[in-house]
Image (tube, rainbow, N blue to C red):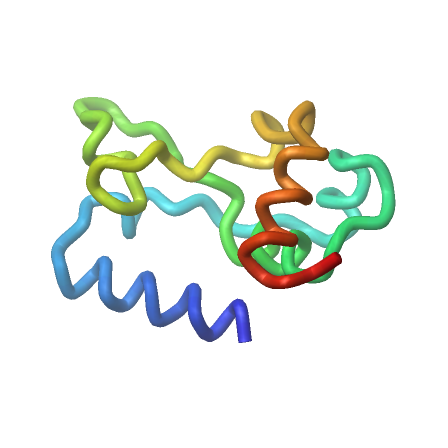
Length: 99
């Protein structure tokens, strides 16, 4: 369900001509997600980073170009987020109902 929602989101972003779409970084393996976050993580966290591992920063890119949604911070890579495991897991539990 999460992956389908993410696919729909990207389709909408592409339709709107958002410059982030071609800058989305490819996903990473479940093993890399678990290694970076210290073991067992919610399936939706693994799915998210398996789908997309942040945003590539390109020459000439503005902050708005890197925003998934205008006015919001960019999607960070797992490398940048790994030190924030507790916050990340908490956010996903709120978003997905995972406890």
